Amino acid sequence: MMYCSSKHLVGLGCLAPFLFQSFLLVLVSAESFDASSIGVCWGRVAWQPLAPRIVVKLLQDNKINKVKLFNADPHVMKALVGSKLEVTVMVANELLNDMAMNPKKAQDWVDYNVKRYAFPGGVDIRYVSVGNEPFLRWDNGEYNLVLAPAVQNIYDALKADGLDHKVKVTVAFNADVMGTSYPPSKASFRQDIANQMRRIVSLFSETGAPFSVNIYPFLNLYQQPGVFTMGDIFLDRPNERNFTDPGTGLVYTNVFDSTHDAILTALSRLGFPDLQVIIGEIGWPSDGQGSLNPYANNAYAQEFNNAIIQHMLSGSGTPLRPGKQIGGFIFGLLDEDMKSTLPGTFERHWGIFRADGTVKYNLDLTGKGDANAQLVPARDVAFFSKQWCVVKQGANPTNVAAALTYVCGGDKSVDCTPILPGSSCYFNNKLEDVASYAFNSYYQLQNQSQASCDFGGSARIVGTDPSKDGCIFFIGMDQASMLKASRRLWNTLTHTALGCAMAMLLIWFL
Image (cartoon, rainbow, N blue to C red; front, side):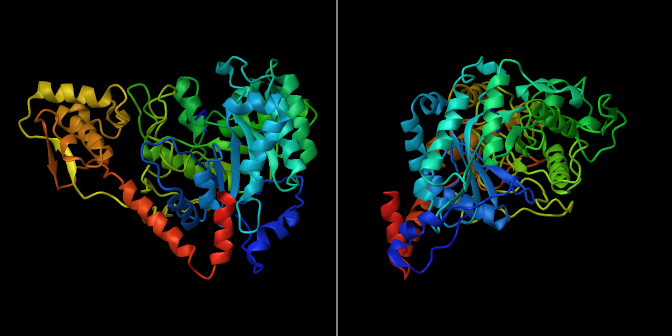
């Protein structure tokens, strides 16, 4: 969507980061992406994002060993030091022009965001994604001419730092790079980007980097409900509309396999039939349905994500490339309540965890198909008191409605998509319940300030959880307490027997 580690410190004292930097080069196979486990995308467009150290522990607790970031935020990167997670960092689209036009800026970006973490016990950066869906049609060609030189300059910068064998350069493409995708045997890339794609993919082939593409069967169903059926989309459901490709005789039972093999065919037309294809993003939203979208809910999200993970890791492959696991990332790790809803009101609900790290549904990340597999929630999250803000009994409905409009209108940082028709907190549009959800959201985001639960005398604070019927009235996170805890942890670490090594890390990052 637009919106789609490392080795331990060794016993050589404070010189370790410098003595071993030259030994970080690791030769990789032609298929550089390890497809034996699923990764996740970690976005942070939230009003109260979880502390990076908590998220890193969340990943480790759930045995997730690959994570894709949408930038290279230094706070996140510091938290990843020593985690052993395999990390993908990203060059933001707004930087592509500078990266393309000025090789020194590309070098500076790599030095600051990659090289300085490349020490034993640092961050295991495996990929730099240059741009996020930079060839989207609705960008009107803004990045068409700058992407290829930006990719080349980032690669050259990695090579200058001696990191090109360990860190691969790729691009997070959207599936709309396809001009023709059906049937798969006739697939090709769009003509307006064909030459640039050939140049970029040639570099991938020369350097052993994978081709990364974001595939969203959910959007096929959401945007064209009369064209696609549930059987086309959900891999665990029988499909009576199996399709035989007239060009190859291969039988397709779902949209994912068809899209994947269309990409393979398009790459073959460019002369790269053996390039590894990974899934940069795939997932399903759990809420924010809206009246025109009955598909974004917990049950479908659980079903789709379990089935796609099982399919990708099974080794069954696709009709055109059978017998292979398919590497990739689930989008996303956490809900992001500050994302734009322009693509759809579901856009804030792609996470397999809620924004506070609590679990939404059972999910088997191993791909073994265990329906009872449970995710581990985030630990050490400091919440405010167990109290909520709800509509006061007997409150004037006109005043309540006006307050609801105030909370959900403008820029109040309150996510009101769960109260849309069909969403988890719609309550058949019962004003008291819908407004209570919105009032509580505002109250929690205002750090449970008593003044924020008044609304002209229409609201009150209660000590009984009003959550019901699958609608969760959340409690706000105490960010100040968690920040203090992080500082205490850092102070403790810098005064332990690892003082020398940890002091070096502090100097390194400053």
